[in-house]
Length: 385
Image (tube, rainbow, N blue to C red):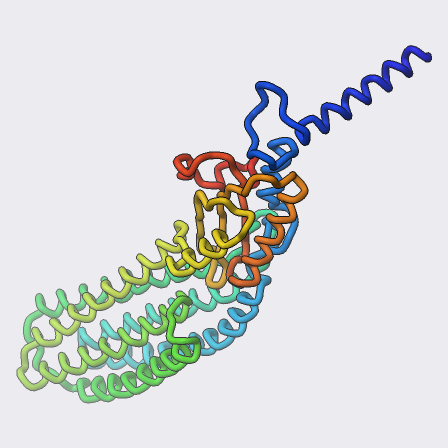
């Protein structure tokens, strides 16, 4: 028994010595560590990544809980009102345009009816985006649901293209193939409908523009951007339809009205392309604005404990949430506990200075800047994931 006890004590002493060995100097052949950092390499790197604790540090800290998210929720309420106003206007106008277009047999008026139907459906998509994008993060979506807003905006762009643009092209081509149309029995009623529609669309556009100005003149919100684009396009489209119908009545040539319908189609396709391109860029992982990335990099480089910022990656997670991942090289002379404290302090400073930084990851590395092209998210063992 005494021999066994002695062996156990000897093993325990050996284990303790080995556990502390990296703090006093790495044995020959061991992986290189940053001079003076102390602690085993995996301990130091884990502390640098530190994805499990600290404010805005890990997946359990949802991107919708910071000050920027609270401000965004208030903006959502105003945006929801703007969308509801546009939806109500488009539903009424769509019915009026469709009835007038059928009675008058006007291709331009029918094109505008399809445009209003598409806009109404798109407003439903945008309402879904406003409610679903604010859901809190969960285990399946640890970065939250902020990109739902971009997805529904993409569907809205597709709706404008298919239901608005393509139908307008179809009406224009059919009118040109059908030849001149001399009966204008319902055209006066159609012109009145378009006049009322123009007033309603202009009112909805003014409401959206007013909100844009109140929020600082930016169009970061894809829902608000879509409403402004739809209302602006509707005003132009109604104006084109009015001109086309009036010229058709004056000259008796349907080509004027068919041309107006084709022009409305071109306008809708262009708007759909621009909105769809923006939504695509954000869905596939668009970086933060260069100005914001520059300010984040400047703050990191200003820290006395950081020798260099070898790589900085940002990605928009939602309207007011941004992922920040940085690979940094610390100054010599820091032990493992000090590295953790420095990482926590830097992340807290980033979170205070940039409220939209909903997720912050720091990867402490010894690699040279030449190897910084690899994304921190690809090195989970180093705290990047």
